[in-house]
Image (cartoon, rainbow, N blue to C red; front, side, top):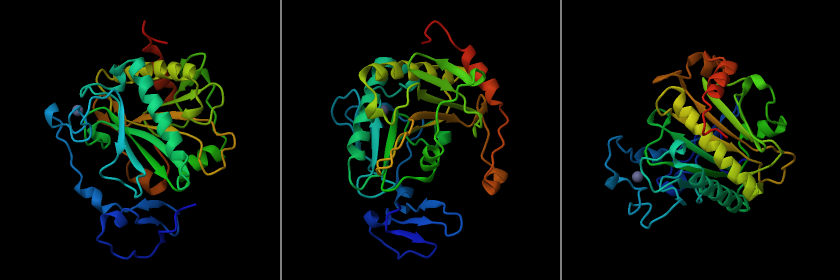
Length: 309
Ligand SMILES: [Zn+2]
């Protein structure tokens, strides 16, 4: 259920206090679309791509990471929602690292931190859904290059995960769209992918969330993620911009048989060339994908090498 300060199609009372302005959440009265009006985020800094590491707020010694660390989380200084619902997760102290280069042991530390923050935020009585996500690359909105992701803790279950779990989502089993299969995990290209490049990573055994994964499956997931991100960066011969998010069970008491998964998508239909979400897609709410999911699955499958899991 949306929080009480959602405004239904009328003008909100103007507020000067940034802490209250972050709570300006509106729902379109006809479509039901939820829009968070976050004027204060216009002021957040954009780090130039050629910034020297000394100026990076996420490098050890920087503004957000004064002490040495392997992985680190902190409350977002530029939150999209009030009440400490927005966190930043630093994957590595290495400014130029990425999921594709970190290696499985380092990724395992990120997974442990994602799981810990999911459990901690999900236990809050005012949190119904925890979204772990990452934007990598300026073209998908990343404002700082240092490897990091974010976490949003909602006081309601957003529409997309609500529909996903209400639809009893489970992993695709068609070998035509399989990229990687291990004892514990499957990596597939979604049947109706909205984006030119898309993979879905899911446990073979129904599991609701990251905190429910034991050490063995967290370790195997770290190997799968290292493999998948390596193949995604190899696909076009250069680092690919992507959006990643983790679908996990709601924390509103309606867990049911939710099956967790990790989605990674990229707008690139070839190296350096993005397929934009354009007027017909925004206007109609239907997508036109020029890349055949089975063909991108075959290309990603063919990128297996000696390092593959
Ligand atoms: Zn840095």
